[in-house]
Length: 348
Image 1: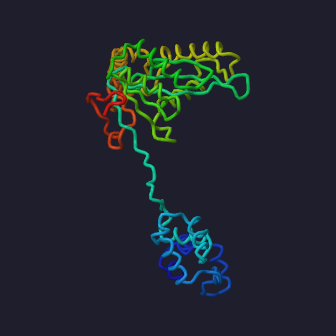
Image 2: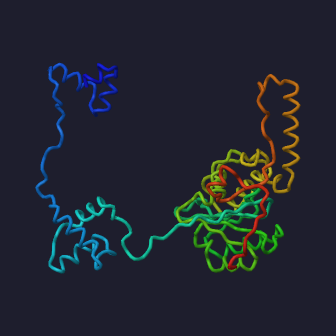
Image 3: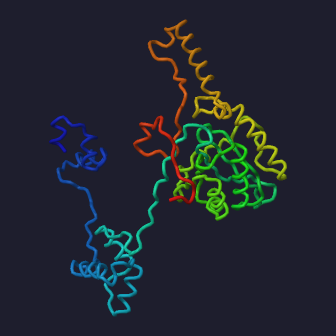
């Protein structure tokens, strides 16, 4: 310590390297001693397994009869064979120390493969949907909001409220929405999570009949369906309508959601699509709106260039491609101009 300080090092920096406090160093110097007075754990563990016992324990765990079993099953089987070496906790500890505390059974660990990347270049090309709860006045009873959103325009294209959550309601809503938006077979991909209404036999059969490609999130990964999750947060915390947390009847819930959908599609300026309304982007009107904004900024920059101080004006360019579940390399370099291709549900 003294050598480090004499060489120009700060005392507190040298104390950090040694793992002591400055107050400890000051106390040592007052005692006029150069000996390291730190007290470590210098006790001997009497019940520790010997090296021979450790080797025997690991060799038994890796024997052909036990190499696919967890420690909780190895120890009882060894006891049935008349052999006790160590407890289950000790075996777990040594397996972890040797980096063998992994999936030891023959069955492979299930893999959560990332959903296929979907690119939308125009409306009615990629939809995502989910179900959220709406509270009722009866505790434990809910109204279920089925809601479908277009990924390209963020427009709500279909919704219904029901008192139950099942595949039949989802199938009926999907048929109605595809009919209203004139969706042709092979045109659309529908992304959702792994809920029972989404993967029910009736819903999957409906998608196959309509020629809609089904895409599903990974289990317990909400980011795979981020568009619907984000929309539900807007629905429950929006400032455009009076916030109602509990609905007295199905009619009240339907009336409120009807007003919300109208506000969201026609009035809400969505930040992800350059602050245009989802309905205007869905109808293709956003290009003209953004071009007018760009011209307004150019005129303002020409009148008072000093306000921008040599910087470029705000970018109001049109967003051509929206990607759902992009690959890692596509996050920094988004795909542009590629045609969207998919197979209908059930195709190989």
